[in-house]
Length: 114
Length: 115
Image (cartoon, rainbow over all chains, first blue to last red; front, side, top):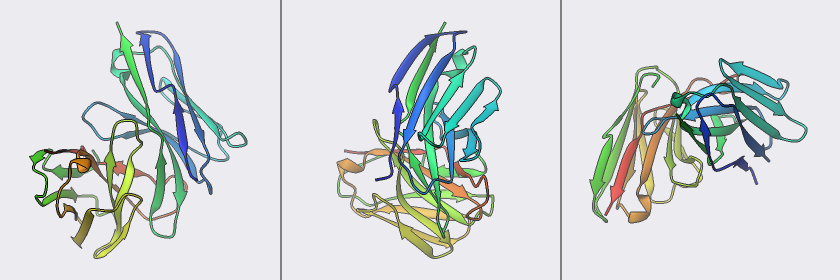
């Protein structure tokens, strides 16, 4: 069964601190893996994307890693800001004949406190 | 939100009433999707469309129907709303299948409450 599991479910950190979010997947066939950020009351927005041949990708203070052998990914946030408070969703893509199928994790809710 | 609008943004309705949610895009993308998002669950695909009048079921399609009469609009209908359909509904769009970084872009969501 295609699944994406994220940990922790929620996390509270102090502004300026770093944190790492985890994602394990069992999706096959694998096309790519994205991390989305979803602010409260908004739709998800893509942060990073990696194919199986890429093992790291950065977007400002966000760095994603991918280990295709162990089927694990992580999202590292450096020097957190209050605006980083959001849900972070790991999504694995399967390319189909018509469109693409996304398998979503349940998300990690991050709260950054001042 | 990548040229995607959803209407209404919020709706409260009663059990047994029909409800239609609208997704409108200005990107001329071929593929459109309807998802629902519930606490503790990842987004789950309800239905998707791969062209005008071409639609298919997702993993949670029971109780929902869709229609796409033109490229820019994708409608989701709950024929007889139930409390279990209380959720936040997201529309998404994407370009041609395949490609190295094919991406889905999401709308702002519609919060539906069925009493």
